[in-house]
Image (cartoon, rainbow, N blue to C red; front, side, top):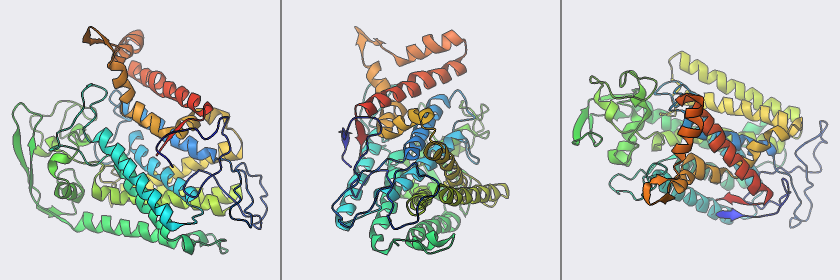
Length: 492
């Protein structure tokens, strides 16, 4: 896929001829059993001539699910402050915001299975995977590394002593690279048809599951066996920088201060390159305003002031499992021809994962924790993603209820655009940059939020929520729809 805006064809959901490296489309062989239930995902015949390419229809569920994830991200990022219950959990537990990242990685995995379903040249596929990974890393560091100060500050630039190396796109890049490379290098080991049996698809793609298992072992062994010594940091948020020391000297701890996830990031990246405003500052131990943000308590422990990387290295290794589960759902879509067969595979796995995550959490074996990307969190969120994906597939691709989901499809087809402009505040910064005589006399988007929404409804919480829904989500949904009609998409 090429970076930038592309215009393949105009028209509603124009049928695209997908190349080896891309496209959310699905193919079927003529010699497989006939579809008894009527596929809404158009089948194409695989000809003997390998150079003859057939038109395919995009899997609408994929775009709608991706669009839902973007909408959730914008909602929780910009309205989470007004509604802390939907914001990220301060530590253990799972809120609406905590579903966003694993949903992203899940749908990345599904898309990889479809994009790499036929590989003619492994070397070319690897080059494209590496290039796309580098593009994701570049955009991630540019947007979340500290260089961009949008939307609150119109300046840009970052002190390299404090640049943040990790972030959302960086985690997606790592998971995408690992999962896609395993899929590529095992292309010759893929079966053309599955053996009989409900579990045959797991054995057919055992190398993909082995990769996920290796990531799981690395994460679990490191998390519970790595010794975490005392460590120190400098608090630069106070009037005068002050150094604090956090006492640990333990292993296997899953609390905020002394976990192995944070220790690995401090050793690899350096404490000054971690996220400086972690969600644990909303814990009761840190603020009386919990679960909302608020001033730190005078008796708050030192670690409440410390940085912590929510998209760090060790937790991102655990996140590979989310992509692995996603690619399994893509493999099911490729190999199983009937709707009921697909839904049976998807829903059974989704509920098993969901229940396993709940059991691990409530037995206190492994708490659900987004910041640590714990195994219970992987299971719980992947199970939820699988169930939501199945429901979308049933409604959109089986029952044909596509119109109510077109809004999400449009956003999903231009996910990168909406992520950059809305979720990262780049468009808001652009609007704020236009002023008359004085920079303070600008087209402030916050003026619109305060005077059009908050003051009208006489409620900061409700006004903020309505602003996010209409001035951000609805606005960018309409923009994405117009761009879709024009055949314009921003892809990496």
